[in-house]
Image (cartoon, rainbow, N blue to C red; front, side, top):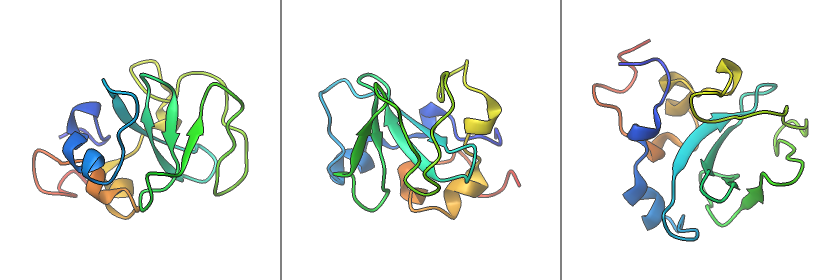
Length: 115
């Protein structure tokens, strides 16, 4: 299993059950603040960022300057999800496991086996 959580592991049903619907045709991915490691869920179809794994009604917009809710630093420019994202934005399975977003993805093998 990859060290990083792939988009294909995102549990769309769990997100929808928790109120994560957006505009339809959601495309979800996880990323983290490269400064402090705070994890976010993104619907990159409409550049919406879900700020809190315990409350999906808390959202931000990546079409404007985006500041981390934890460390208050501005996100660096450039893609934070997808194949062009820098490694500093990628979320590992271990990071996910200990975050409020641990429910948001399903590994193909045992959780944490890749560590």
